[in-house]
Image 1 (spheres, rainbow, N blue to C red):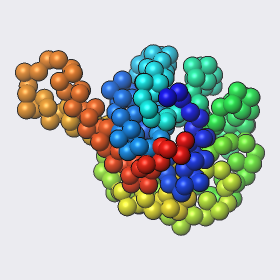
Image 2 (spheres, helix red, strand yellow; image 1 turned 30 degrees about the vertical axis):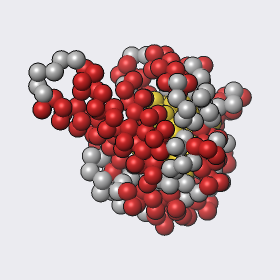
Image 3 (cartoon, helix red, strand yellow; image 1 turned 30 degrees about the horizontal axis):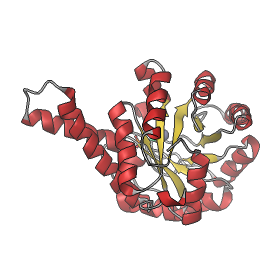
Image 4 (cartoon, rainbow, N blue to C red; image 1 turned 45 degrees about the horizontal axis):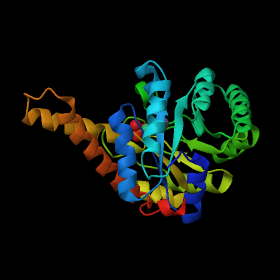
Length: 284
Ligand code: G3H
Ligand code: ZN
């Protein structure tokens, strides 16, 4: 199947009342795991490549080409999304590489600068049919720089969307990036208030720290796109660790990356079930 638009996936999920899983990949095996997990769940999925992943690889194009080819090789409806981009040039490159959507992350900027840059990037993307997510009220956690106590104000969020024209908004409601324990508490009442106030779909970042039941409740309260990465990395790495602990003599990477890919795919499928997305692929 060819790449779909993230907006189409999110819209279809909104009509059916479930969440869209958006999972990050750094390695080819992780791209394959995301798509295999979605296929297992018979659900659509957003494959995310972050600015940090691009920095690790040293270039966007190889990962973008691999992701596009991997999607084309499966039956899974999927879109390709650039995650947490702060550099305009990277956004331009991603769009030229065929990304269906981008997240411009100006959340660390002062209000006026965040609004100005987000508006400019959104206009540029919209001219090219690309869906834009932005962030207001930083979702804490990355590099230990921010506490999970940050909250997005519904009035400010509505104003931000109106002034920038973005298609989706990442909100701070209690989650925190890169948690390795699933014990975050979300402000579900705030999610509901944001849902009322904001005319575009809401995105939850830092979902790895959110327990299953709370993730499902967040979708019910109004979250539509669920970004999750660290938890899947933990499952992937855990599987590698287990295999190598049992068979320290192994040298062929397929022997440990293969089981890791399988474990991650199973977890992707399970999380898609938590979001209520199982069986939703047919709607696309
Ligand atoms: O944008 C990506 C997500 O916010 C991932 O956060 O690694 O804490 O799940 P996480
Ligand atoms: Zn994030």
